[in-house]
Length: 103
Picture 1: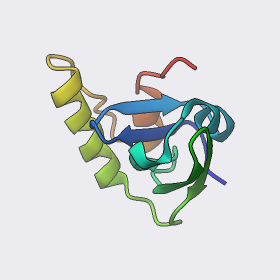
Picture 2: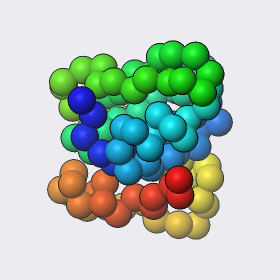
Picture 3: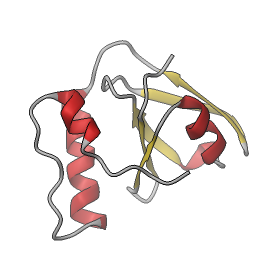
Picture 4: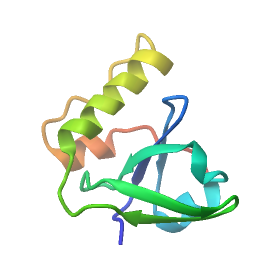
């Protein structure tokens, strides 16, 4: 089971930070717009299901922290130019500093 918050990236490179699995599944409409995601432990997520009925699961127990940090930095560069992404070396602090998506 994913540990929240969940950090999800869509096909436009936009990042969504959703507090838990249930809110992420309720928020996300189209599974084909999902590019990748991570839970708060940097474990990759996978999404399946029909439109408005998505299911989010942990895709691997192996953390992908470097990939998560790279994607967050890319989001900031593309979507939030001029703002600095979190720089905390501790993963839990890094995730806590991400801007939450309102749900």
